[in-house]
Image 1 (cartoon, helix red, strand yellow):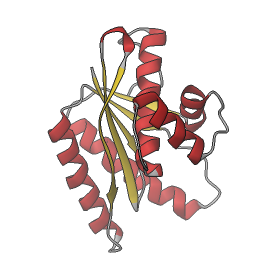
Image 2 (cartoon, one colour):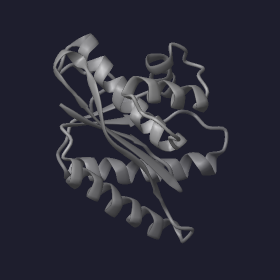
Image 3 (cartoon, rainbow, N blue to C red):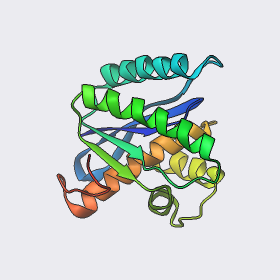
Image 4 (tube, rainbow, N blue to C red):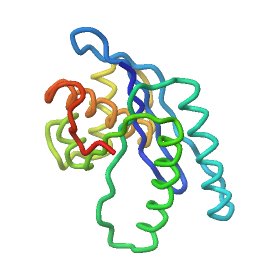
Length: 167
């Protein structure tokens, strides 16, 4: 089972790919950040679509894990995030892949044991859980955390469950 986690953003979108092996063991495949230019929003969204479609084609995941929208204080930021999420949803829909969405608090709780974990704590635990060395960008770590959370929820509730709100 291959899972692609996506942490959407209008400037930087993180992605993380893991394999779930027999016995629930996790294996790191790839991660990174899709950094969008400083152009107009339509151009950035088109870049996001093209880049994410390449990641999906390269890694051929079985399922996608996406961060669920949370309420933001800044309406403009929330709208931009919503637009980026819309592009992600279109790319996932075009690839006809199952989608699960998870609240940030659940992802943090699953990976670190606390729903109030910092970015640094997420990065540290992802490195530990996946046996990674060196620096891991925050966006990539968040995306990998989404993948790990999905793997855990699938195992906890049984494969094919509607954990996280399948789309």
